[in-house]
Image (cartoon, rainbow, N blue to C red; front, side, top):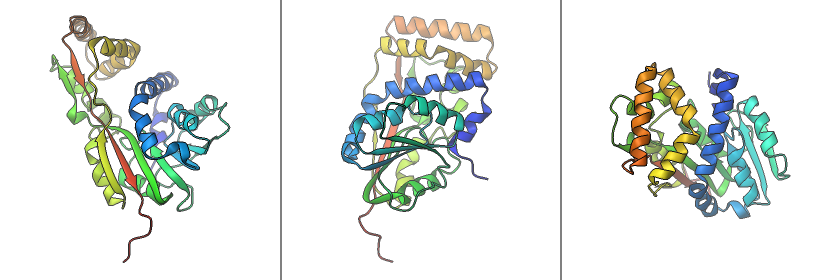
Length: 273
C-alpha cells in the first residue's frame, strides 16, 4: 500500500504534531529568501493555476498565494494538517485545499501551470512516482518545482561531536522513514519524469554564529527530543548543549546543510515515439 506523505504524521502524538507544526512554520520563515527567486523563475506571479503538493500546515502555500492572483491549490494526505492550513489560508480567497495522495494526484493531465513541492520528496514512499504525477498534471511548457530537498550526506559541522553529530546527519530522518540523501537524487528523478531539468543549491550563504544560535534556541525542543528518542543520556545531552552554545558564543561554529532545488520544464509537445 502506498501512503500519502501525511500518513506518517499520524504516527505522532498530539504534542509531537504541535511541535512539528511549529517546526514547519520556522522552516518556512527561514527558507523564504531561498524559495522566492525560484518562484519568480517558474513564473508563479503570472500563473493561473498552481498546485502545492504536500502542502502540510499551509505556511509555504501562503507564500505562493501572496505572490499571485491565480488559483493556488494545496493538497496533503493529513486531515489534521489540512485543518491547520485552512486557518492559515483563511484570508486568501485564491487558495484552496484538498485531501489527496501525492502518488495519485486527483487531477486530470495538463491542469496546472506550475506544480510545486517543498520538503516532500524526502518523505514519500515513492519519490519517482510522485515526480511523474507532478509532471503529469502540469501543462505542456509548464514547470515542476521542488523548492527544498536536503541532503544530509553533505552536512558540514565544525567543531565536530562524533557521538552526537550522526543523529543530526540523517539518522533521525531515516528512523522516521525519510530519505536523508534525497537531494542528490533530484536530477535523476526529474529527468526520468521527462522534464528539462535544472538543479541547484538554494542556501549558498553560511550563517553567522549568532544566527545559528538563534535558530537553535528557537528549535531547542526539537533537537533535545531527537537525542532523547535516540536514548542519549541526559548528562551527555547537557554536556553537548553546553559545548555547542559555548562554541557559538566564541564564534567557532560553522554549519552548512545543503538544500537542493530542482526546476523541471515540461516539453511543449509529447516526444515522438
